[in-house]
Length: 303
Image (cartoon, rainbow, N blue to C red; front, side, top):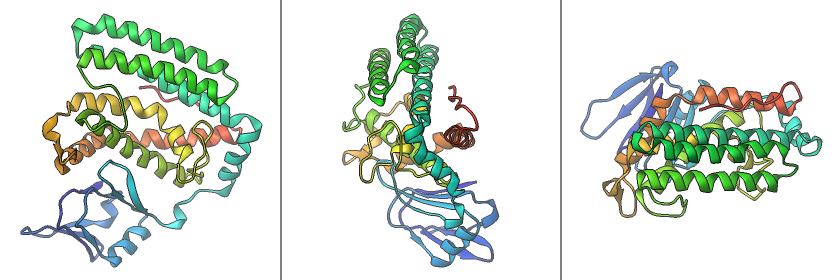
């Protein structure tokens, strides 16, 4: 199970093989450590004991501190969680043997196909606009068909950008949402950023578990501090977040001081957990490892 802490003033401790959650003015809650898969802390003003940290590490429980944008600000996990070093060697060699570019092409192909599927699914929510959204989906799918012929990352990114422009324009017209802009301060874009932050954490976690270098990708440009591989592998899952946020219908009352309220962030986390995507992400990262090692060909995830 996931333990999500979203309130200020919470104290997290350890006693007799249990995580103990103490909230102001409330009774202590005991959760057996063996039932905890991960601990998510969404806000500041939370204390955690060193005894609990050691107990969680022994049980391979991932502890994540998120910032207000949904990005993992810090993570605690034991060093034994890392996979074999052979995976990382294969990852680096894939720069030279072409497998890295092929993986990037397959991931972006999967993303664009999923964007087309998301448009059709969204059309079921607006029946009067279904044909229009289905037409946009067909145009998006045309970009996907061109990706396998690319010979370099710039070509892949070009088709990805063309598909994204068509995709977001169609969603904006159908649902009245703002244009996609990661730097915008409207509720819709802030909610998307937060959802993508959670997704990035989930992919990052699996990259570490599988022994991969989160910073060595094939599509996104290498830059100090940028988890390029994580950004590559999360692409085909982004349409899940898009639909999740569309369904949630973010509004002005989600904001406080220009950022998402704690309640809004907690609601997005709950919707993420309801999707149960993490086992699928684990499988896809495992397929990526097999592809990089030459033991198989990556099969993109389908929405």
